Image (cartoon, rainbow, N blue to C red; front, side, top):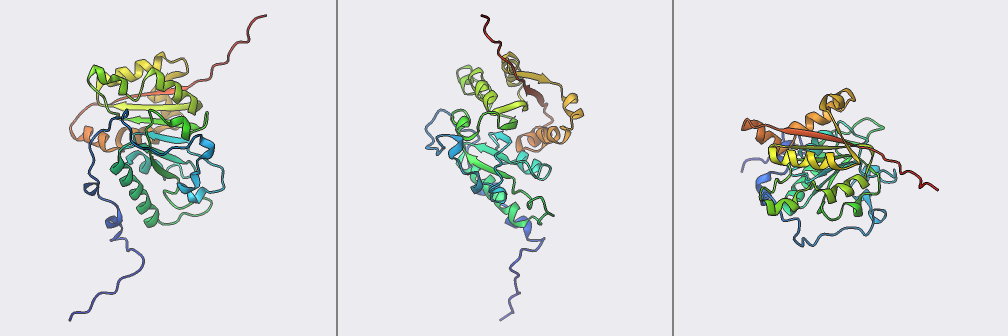
Length: 265
């Protein structure tokens, strides 16, 4: 009988890729109906949610997520940004069960296989997590007022039919919630390869009094270049558009602060 090779308890660099989940094992439809009853679990208020279960390395720090990727898909944006902003907590929200599980398993594998970083930063990918949630219904249940600095809407479902436009993730009603959880000065990043949806999202954001359009070159001057590059090319959808030679429409908006005038006496 041939001798069996001795295996190490620690994964070798050659075996690390095999520990990462494979999308073929997480079959899921491309989209989900946000108006269906998905039996989701959510807190009654942000104060009741324990973020230490998602970010154990930051337990006791008092930190809460500052970046939120709405409809995060397979987590490309989160995985790209996590090492660039190791002290910023990032959260992906995804409504599809299997896709959420894939991102969860991907983060767990990256945490397990990434080399520890030098203090004061925790090891890689400790600052990123994902939850299964319906962003059209429960965002204020997770995020306190003015707690986020960045909101991402990357290649959202275009809902082409007019009767389905009410399901678009950018709408007058939802923008009020986004303005509530986004801190003054915070940014909304939107991108799509559907021109009609790009016009829709920009028109609704421009019509809202608490959002102001920001040119891409201005954001790059402010040091947001790495974020913009990730918005363009880190997601599965973005890469697919590039492979097909498609066009992408980016629009970014800053959350502005408005002071109410005291009533005249």
